[in-house]
Image (cartoon, rainbow, N blue to C red; front, side, top):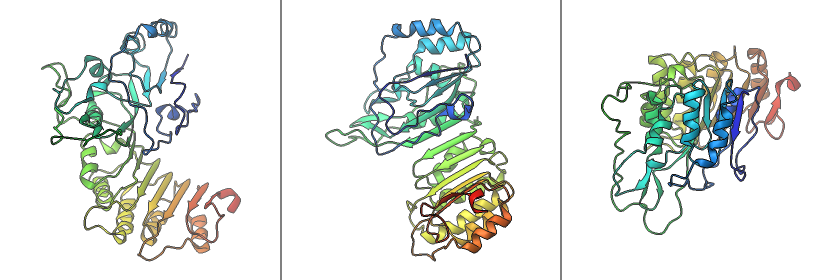
Length: 376
């Protein structure tokens, strides 16, 4: 057996639950659509009896060739199953589509302690993909440090972690203010001396990273200190990927070329910019970024982009580009028109293109998307 999928019956709202054994990249859950405004049920912070999982743990022993386990339940991944993976399936890949470490959720005045089961999961060599909904407060006066924990995990605590997707969730509805004191800094996993080989200077090697929330340049640099962007095959960010974040990514690419980032780049450049940034700044910043990258197969841009970004695509990404999404948001800047001449230019330069999507073009179908073979 190559795959076991475990999920709750209710949890299909807002998620694409299809799993194709012939497309292992779908196992990660990164293709699943999450709605940050839809409140997922809160994970229980209790540590339940795991005896009900024992029959499955026993069954897993009968499948020595097990390669992938997909866990889409909002429950904690049972320590019983994790121990079974470690003992009998050490090379199996664990994909968690609703990842949470329960001891990262605690009252703001409580002592920060990490449960041994959370440590075992966070450092598991089987952990391969995680999809996380994060927020700084789980509810009123209740902290959530899962974002900090995931960033620490990407530095090498989870040695085989390759796929990470984070969405900024909404806060639980509760009376009173979210906090009564300044949010305490997370103290880390606090491993006993000599129990961990990962140093502060360690850096991970994620292959696919999805950041579904607003990002500043400083926040992007924080991620680049956790995982080596040179190993990223695909990156999706936003809404709210501002000018400073675009510039920071371009600078990182110039210092150390992002040679692996040749599959997918998806940036939603919505106007959540830092103080002093304007719509007019985004197009030249995106063009600078595109010029610093290796040719892409899939490029999806959504924001105040225009002539400079389009020219950067033509000059730097025509050799491998298969899919292009180019959505120009309304702004006070000069309006970019996707004319028939530009379509002809793409046809001439992008020999491998199969699909294109644009907004505001008079030459395309009303939905803005079409198969290139039908056009050419």
